Length: 288
Image (spheres, one colour):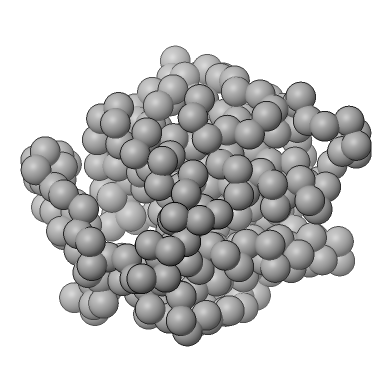
């Protein structure tokens, strides 16, 4: 699978017969890595393949961390689940972790992965010591301000009209270049080039995962932010034109133990350059 760095690509079968693909850097890793390293779960954005891309794998490996990632329903290797909620997709992640014998884990997501990182923490509070969300989308709070600052909210607006409307939108939608800042484009040409390649691979196999993601974002998530009991770090770019900073501010007010790192000059992609220091926070917080 394009993007995955070492480790294992596998699949489990859920009780409803669906296949769920996962990626695990804990198998086939270098010999110097400790035998039972701490686990972080990486929740991919929209769209991606779910693979553990090199900048994530390398930053984690430098800190002795094992990374598990799961392709959400409708993405390559994971069967679709029509009408899934954010909590439904998070439940797939927990099932994979159970299969792998992982009890304790920190959870980390970017963009559309942010809600799923939070949902895992809400569903399994005794297992999650810390959460990080990069440029994560907030629950739909029911008015036009939720869209304010988005360069291209067309897909999410279509999702409010239902599955047929969102699927129809996907047939003709094109990327809006103004969604990214100059710093975003520079980041995609450099250390995070694999992110763009993986997004292309995730979209190439169809729109189903992306459509279901957007429908889930604007529908009830199946969990409340107040149910997240673990310390939660929100990392947000002040110039993000995909998920504006108002989303992080809204969530901060509703999380029980939330903390916001606002990086004023960063956009939706360039904010990911803070991943190494966020992982340091994750390690330190998980050890408390």
